[in-house]
Length: 243
Image (cartoon, rainbow, N blue to C red; front, top):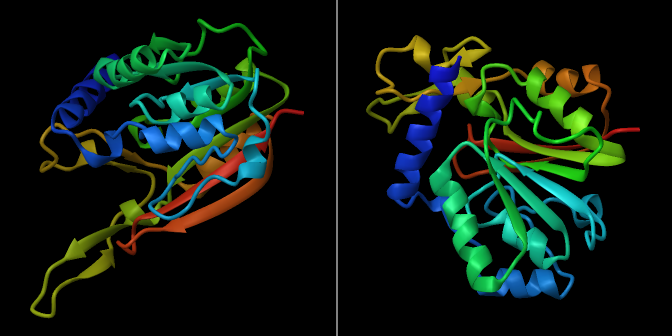
């Protein structure tokens, strides 16, 4: 299993080096708005996590799980949260390190795997925020179990993921411009195909995402979606609470 995550880290580091657009850091305007009480955390190009899900973050302990990259953590810190970031990619963590140094933000950076949060005691965090990243782990259940363990009672777990349709469908080109066709069964693993050039990615079922959280003890209290321009690129966010 270890070699899978080593490959994932290499892949992400390479994407950061190539300046992929989703690794862009928070802007001055975004950080100023967060400092002024107008925090906005986007999970799609045109949609934000509902503000009422986040509440007042001043003094709250927040874990950005697989959430490095200089975006979420600086904004949360500007909003007054005590932020810890855990990420598999050192190059993504370096983006947070750089912006924290420039803006004098107190952000704790941890290099590690989201499946193993053993470095954190039970009931450490008020909020765990997980941006799209679960497609890098073969099984989401260990992640959910660890999130439940490190959350305080009454704490929230906000998870963003890709709808399974993104993995069920492949694009087929034809004389009319092409179309999507459902060809893959779920769960999906890119390593099962020969043309992925070392890329490792997993497609999980909605049963795993929703049922997995419930099985770990979470109560799901919120669900929103964001449809991107590509019809198979459908993101969703859940809010779950530890009672």
